Length: 166
Ligand code: FES
Ligand code: FES
Image (tube, rainbow, N blue to C red):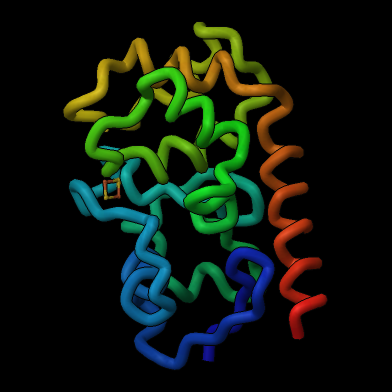
């Protein structure tokens, strides 16, 4: 059995250890925000955080997550309660079809600097086929900083709410 934390919740997986983390998240845990584009580590659509670092989940066998922390775009906001980074994408036309957006959000949430040049470098490798990259860079640059602290605070707030409801 492979045990790890996903978005602050303990999870276990009892299947093949080399199943892709991407498939475990989507098929076994129902976390479908993480998308599959190329399936070869080239497009960034499947980006999640593993112990706080962006990784392409299509290249990570689930056994590598043993004992570690995985965060997906579901750890950010949700419809009606978007986090500041998601709101900035919405307000600055950084999303069209949205397929690349969850991966971009996860990488962007780890950027320490958000001036346009740092964002361009930090998000290099993420492919988007419909929104102009200019709008994506602008969405991240204009989002309130620091991005990660805000995401983590949102996650903590959500967990506290869930505990109160139990
Ligand atoms: S689907 Fe993983 S990088 Fe493209
Ligand atoms: S918004 Fe459509 S691929 Fe990026």
